[in-house]
Image (cartoon, rainbow, N blue to C red):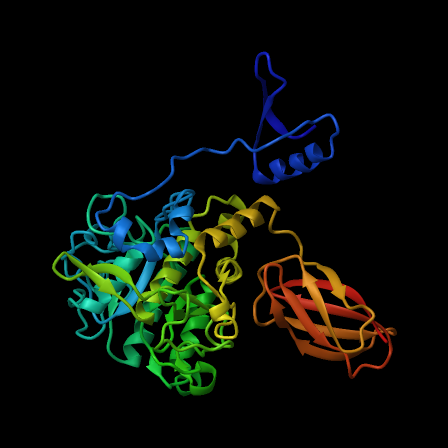
Length: 485
C-alpha cells in the first residue's frame, strides 16, 4: 500500500521499519501516515553522526568567523568535497597567485584528470598544455606564481580540514582550480576555461571536465560599472547557464555601490552574489561598501585567519576575506544529501545554481545593522541555507510550477503572486488576458520575495474586470485568475 520494499517489526514493540526505493515514494508514504489515525508517530531513520569539530591547530581560537557563519553546524551534515554520488566538487579561484605547496593546501589543489603531467602535450585538447591545476594567465604558463592574497583566499575556502595542521577551510575536501591574472582579458579567459570545464562535465555525464560549482572574485574595479565592462560582465551569465555561481567581494570603500558603481558586484545577473564585509560587532565594517540593490549579503571577513606563503598562517581581513565564506557556502551546499536536488544538478544545472543562490540569500541571518545596507539585510548562515535545501527535498521538489496565492485579489494597485518554488530566473514573463481572452499586457517578472518566490504586478492602469494571468519561465508556466476593482 505504501510502496515499501520491506517491513520489519521490532520484537515486543509496536514499531515498524519501512524501506523505500526512492525519496518520492517516501514522501507519498509520509503523507498517508500523517493522515492515518492508527499511526501514533513516525520519523525518518536518519543516519546519526558524531558532532563534527575539526582538530586543526588554529580552529578553536582563531577561526571564530566560521562559527559566526554557522559552518560547524552545517558540517554535522556534510563537510563538503563531494556530492552524495561521489562527484568531486571544484571551486575556481582567480587571484594574483597562490602557494600551492603550502602544507595545509597541497592536497586541496584540483588535478586535471584529462592531462598527463609533464608530457608537453595538450592531452584533453582544451588549448592548454599540462594545465594540471589551472593556468597562469599572466605568464601563459601552467605554474601559478606565489602570492599572499591568493594564498589567504584559498586557505579560507579549502584548507584541508581535520588534519591536525593549521586551519580548516569552509570545505574540508573540495578541490581548488587556480588562475593567476592581471587584466580584464585574463579574467575573461579564465572564466571561459571554467565554463568549458563545467560544460564538458555536464555533457559527458561527469566523465570529462570538472564539476566546478562556484568561482571566487575577491577583486574588482572600485567605481567601475558592469556597463563599462560588458564582455567581462556577460561571463557571469554564461557561467550560470552551465551551473556555476560567483561570489564577488564588493569595494573596500565606505560608499553606496548603487550610486558609485562597483565592478563586478553591480552586474545584473542571477548568477552572482555581491558580498560586503561584516565587522566584529555585527556591524558593517567601516570601509566596506554596501548597496541594497547590488550587494546581496554580508560575511565576516574582518578578523579572519588563514594560510600564508611558506606554510605559515596569519590574520586576513577586508571584503576579500568576506567573499570566500559565501563561495565556500555555495560549494558546501552542493554536497547536501538530497536526491531531488542532485537530480536537478544533472538535468538542469542552471536551475540548480539558482536554487543554491536562493538558499544562500534566503538563509541569511537578519541583523539590524545590515537593514537597508544589503539586499537581504543579513549575514551568511550556511546551516540555515542547508536546511532550506533539505526542506525542499523533504517537500518533494520538482513539481510543476503553480501560483499558490494572489494577494490582494480583487486588487486596484499592486498585487502579489506567491509561487510554489524558490527558484526562478530573470527571464520570466507575465502575460495578462482580459475576460474575452484578448492579450492586453506583457510584463517581465519582478521578483520581490524568495523561498518561496513572490512576484509583483501593478494593475493600477487596468480597467475594472476579470483577468487571467499567465506566468512563463524556463519552459514552465502557471495560470491564475485576477479581479481588478
